[in-house]
Image (cartoon, rainbow, N blue to C red; front, side, top):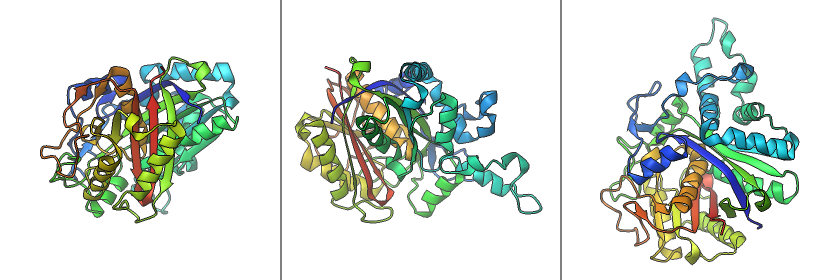
Length: 394
């Protein structure tokens, strides 16, 4: 594929709001997980909660979209000058030539939960929540289109934990087809009872903070996050980092577990490397999906061991942020981009006893080193796999 420029990006998670907060936390090994203090399930494990979401007020013209997920999205859009960059792109190309592609797994389902808890005597939603568009899977993208004033192709992608990685692939195709001149991509997922109780029912919630690739790992920690990036052709931002390749695959092995040999994940990896025109030996850093579940980490450790040389570095950053579900792809894409920008590989927070299955590629502690090419893995339920390869401009 022809590389695309990452003209701007931003992220807000349990590590704080904005890229600087994220890098500072990663640099100093400071995680954002804490005992669960959210919703109806405050005893279910630890969470990665974004502070300040409750206090966010949407602009008057967007008040009809008010819900926790859209507040988190609006909070995220305010960081790192991202709104200004989108407005500049809109002015340069025209509102109808800027695409919007966002990933989410739950959208505003937390507000739908609230509506059902507050049914009136006739069994109807309360008057203040009778807003059909808010209870739809595409509510996040519809809100963002209104907030950003964009009129181009508009897509919501919901493939569980790979959602906001796959938006990069769809955006690249839209630009290659000439259907858009730029694309805003990203994802938002906020905490809600549905997710907390759902993963608990699957017996996947760790009692304390998650421990990716630890020999004694015992489950995931749920987080929330918002992240966005602006994709443009290289001539628009020649000095910006680049999306070099993407790969997608489905292993269709099990509803909630990956193929034990990582067949689907490896297909996605091969497709990303082929589009980037690179061999695996050229990858300096791999941000792993690394959820801290037994099956995912075992599969991914084996994949790293057989495909990447010993001098490469790999780590999971979910010990910092928690698993942000539909927002995980964009969060970890920004981490890969920051590894390139700052020459820093984040450590694999939470693993006190590294799993012996992990090879020499694993970075258990943060380390400074040049990163020219970074890979980000996102593997969702049902085998929805996506890999993204980023590189520096030179």
